[in-house]
Image (cartoon, rainbow over all chains, first blue to last red; front, side, top):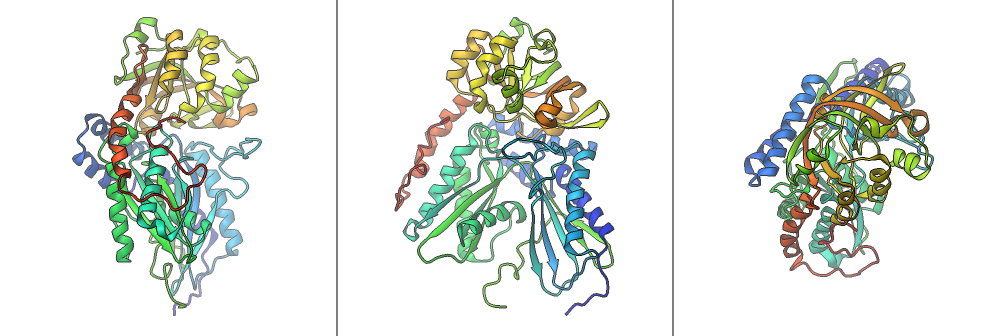
Amino acid sequence: MVTSAHRIGLDAVSRAAYEANRLAAVVLPGEATNAFRDALERESKPMAQYVLGQILENADLAVAENRPMCGDTGLPRFYVKVGNEAAIEGGFVGFERECRRAVADITQDLQMRANRVHPLTRQNPGNNVGVFAPSIDYSFEPDADWVELTAVHKGGLFGSDYRMLFPADGIDGIKRFLLDTLSSSARRGLSCPPVVVGVGLGGTKDQAVRFSKEAACLRVIGDSHPDPDVAKLEDELMELANRTGFGVMGVGGDTTALDVNVEIAYTHTGGIPVAVSQFCLAYRRATARIHADGAIEYREDPRWFTPYYRREGIE
Amino acid sequence: MTAPLSDGAIASLHAGDIVYLSGPIFTARDGVYRHMLVEGNEPPLDLAALTNVTIQSSPAGAEVSPGEYRISSLQATAGFRYARYMPALLERFGVKMVIGKAGMSEEVYRDVFMPNGAVCLSTMGYGLGAIYGKSVKRVIDVHWPEELGISEALWLIEMDRFGPLLVEGDIHGDSYFSRANEEINDGLAELYEGLSSPVFRRLGEEERPEIELF
């Protein structure tokens, strides 16, 4: 067992939260750049080829000029993985205060769009901080004394949906739901393909929605679920999504999805809850690991779905 | 092209063209449409005298020092949902070019845009925010930030080679997205064939995927 005499300082949390948000807003992860390059190489439609080329140019310009890669800078949020032996100076109340402050600061410094408003009055605090904003979700990891935070700036309002199926609906029901969801969002700019599709399968309704979001945002493009049955479904859904032909911007093209990730949770014997989330082509996330001694490492792979996180038995 | 646009310049655009635009434009979406067109608040300046181009956008921007605004990144939002505001916007404010995202229905072009000699363009990508943001030469002014919040305010901005922009609905009523959707629809039904029907059909869950705008 790892034990630590150190407490992670809030100054390190502050720096990590700020920089992870800057990286998320500005830098397209390498896996996404590669996926766009591959899509451009495969593409047969001239308009889609042109747009994919522009997307790659935009990604370069964003980094060169430290500009947000998209004008809709999304809703900043945090996924936090806490080592079981980690301790934070000021505790998690202090940690969350630094996360909220980092969002306010980066919103001003990068001139990010102030997206968060009161849902009824539409009052805008101007800094993307408000009631339950930014959202902060937690998971845990054994034998570790670090804390990791992943900043995610997922854009858009539409393209995410939920449906309760019966077991007899099976794979066909899941495919039908995916087609319905893609069709209702890809045509007129409600989603921004090529997307990374997350499918949450099973659990309860709220778990299905949550895991669909995590599958869209926190897996690595091109990876597979360790369960071979789930991995096979991922491949089938990926093929189906791209056979729709919506393509980039929905103007027609060969790549509608850069990847389809499925996460499962054990569910009620009577049903299959299924949810779909789509991460837009501004694929914005970045991870920072804060070590017990205050050192910070930044990386692109969130490493969110660890074997422990997906554990099946009691241990 | 340079704003304000002449009738001749508007007429020269055809669905599927890609253009770059310079000159002044103003932002308007949910907040401005409601405040200006529904509640009838007069804009604090003569918009029509300045430009006839608007963008359905809330910029990524901030007040960097008192009274000084900067935009870092820019992108339009899905425009079909604003169709109801188009008659007032075009007729009362002389707008000839609406830059949105992914266009509106052919019906709106025929009934509202064509009689007013106006066209609809789409930002591209969607997510060329850095490229578009760089083309903002300066923020001339921001109106109604207190009333509408910084993101929904009316931003008056001067552009320098703002593009690429896709001509979506032209003055002849031709729509690029409608054409693209017809092609996509040809293949879509086939994907549903062979999938077993749902065990339980519920209100609101059955859609006809060939319908483009509901």
